[in-house]
Amino acid sequence: MMPELGKYAFAVLSAYGATAVLLVVLVAATLLRGRRVRAEMQRTEAGERTDA
Image (cartoon, rainbow, N blue to C red):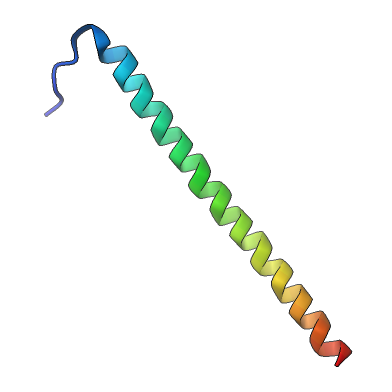
């Protein structure tokens, strides 16, 4: 299934590994930021309702 990479195997597989790690980090950071922003929006909206 895996192509023969020869002497470039380490470089190619390292690049794939680094890409996978960066994608996971970016997705996790996006999800965490979304949670934080959503919680802040709910706090802000709750504050506006009590002031009205």
